[in-house]
Length: 202
Image (tube, rainbow, N blue to C red; front, side, top):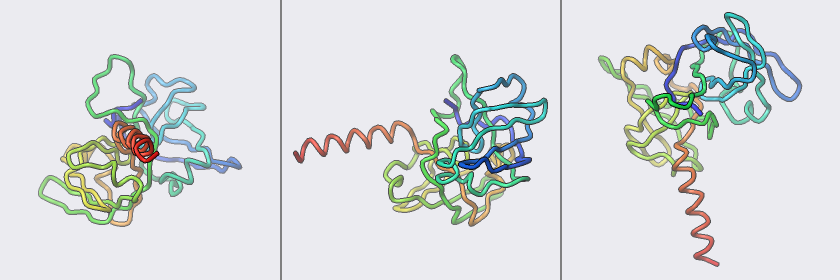
C-alpha cells in the first residue's frame, strides 16, 4: 500500500524487452536508502517489485499486462518518474490509500497555469468516470490529489506549488498520458451496487 506522497523523482536509465514484458532500471537516491530485494516501489503509480539494486539504481520486472494497461507502454530512457516506497505500519497517511493498481490511462487535455497554482484537466474513460467525484481522491502518476472539478468524461485537479516542484506533474503538457488510480472505496461501492442491482432484478 502507498499514500500517494512522492518521495523523489527518479529517471529511467534503461528499458529492456524480456519476452512477455520488460525490465526497467531507474536511477534514484531516497527510495534506495533501505531497499531490499522484493520490496515494492510505486513508479509513477505502478506498483513494481525490486529484483536487484545498487547504491544509485534499482531494476524491476514490468509484466505485459502492465504495459498494455498503463502509461508504462510509453516509458523510455530519460523519462522522469515519481517514486514512493510502500507505506509501513504506523506511518502517517498524509495522502490517501493508494494500491499502485492502475485503472486506466488518461490524456491531459488542458493545462491552465496561474501565478502559483496550475489546473490540469484530463480525460476519463466511461468505465472509470462513475468512480471520480468532485472533492474525492484520485491518483495521477502516483500522486495523491483531490478532484477540483468533474464532467461526464473529464476531471480536473489543482496543483499547489509544492506538487509542481516535487512531482513530474509540474511538467505535464497537453497530450501527455498519465496513470490513473481511482479511490479504492469507490471501486468497492460500485461493485456492491452491481450485485445489489442484480439481486433486485432477479
